[in-house]
Image (cartoon, rainbow, N blue to C red; front, side, top):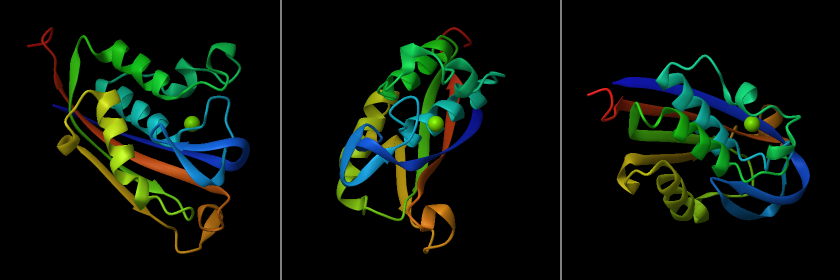
Length: 161
Ligand code: MG
């Protein structure tokens, strides 16, 4: 088994809807990024790459000057990463913590969890998702950014067994 972690943060203020885990969250500007800025998918993609032992991270795999990923739905980045490692590894479980001061994410928990489990191809019970604020401290606490940390456990897929 192999474990990997990922972390991502984007600044708030884009003139598009806020999307986290592929779910549109009303009541906030969007995240500023070359793609749609979905920090949950970005953190998970890096966790998968780390667990699989890739030297690349999503910043090198999907450069922010590549027109293919401009405004991209970030689930597509994660699906691309899963396609890269999927022949050798399959996901046992994943767990994410989203660091967000506002808006309140708990009303969207079920939709976000189902979205993540769907993209990762795992059962909802294998997908952890927690939300926390920064108690008003720092850039996240001031509502200037949203971040996510992720951990993923992989087991050898059919080709490695
Ligand atoms: Mg990112």
